[in-house]
Length: 189
Ligand SMILES: CC(C)(COP(=O)(O)OP(=O)(O)OC[C@H]1O[C@@H](n2cnc3c(N)ncnc32)[C@H](O)[C@@H]1OP(=O)(O)O)[C@@H](O)C(=O)NCCC(=O)NCCS
Image 1 (tube, rainbow, N blue to C red):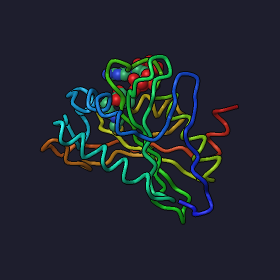
Image 2 (tube, helix red, strand yellow; image 1 turned 120 degrees about the vertical axis):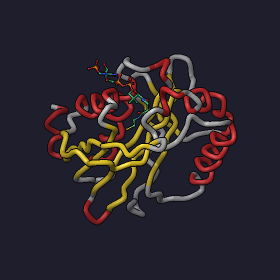
Image 3 (cartoon, rainbow, N blue to C red; image 1 turned 90 degrees about the vertical axis):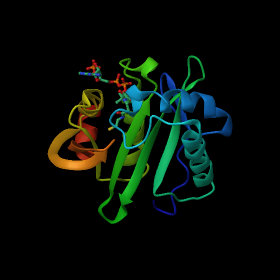
Image 4 (cartoon, rainbow, N blue to C red; image 1 turned 135 degrees about the vertical axis):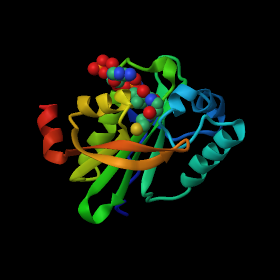
């Protein structure tokens, strides 16, 4: 990311606090990372404790660096102060002002619009503070929860990638979605 840009988090939304992970988030993180429902379409998981510890160590280690290509944030539910998921915004192609997002949430909190709320806040940072032109995301063809989030954000389905990821030993097709800065301004109006 641009060296002149200051850390743009934590972020508050109506029901969430998006902030850096802390060591004492382990139990909350492991609660969703060990859940087969959450891990179903992911390259990782369901996690053993050691895998969640490794994830936490990586999260804490990357907090020592700035700027970062990707920013991973804990999704803290303001109602009960639990960490209920994680969300990421990466700028992997700065020259073309292109970023991508990814997210996962504790299944006990699904279908309340919480992921959409968190992701919308990251799109606002991406197109606002970071000056991005395009933000994309991808998901498994069967991951309706994930592509519904993208559609609610105003992202458009741009493609279908055949066997783009090896997930739990199976080659899986992927949908690619994206939104441009102009689209985002339009949907916010
Ligand atoms: C993807 C995920 C983060 C969505 O979180 P969420 O907080 O439930 O998302 P939202 O409530 O903001 O929106 C989900 C939308 O998908 C819809 N949806 C969820 N599951 C669905 C399904 N199986 N079939 C059809 N629609 C579904 C919901 O109804 C909702 O749409 P609506 O508001 O129009 O009703 C969550 O399902 C998750 O963590 N999944 C596991 C990890 C994962 O797959 N991450 C994405 C990797 S690409």
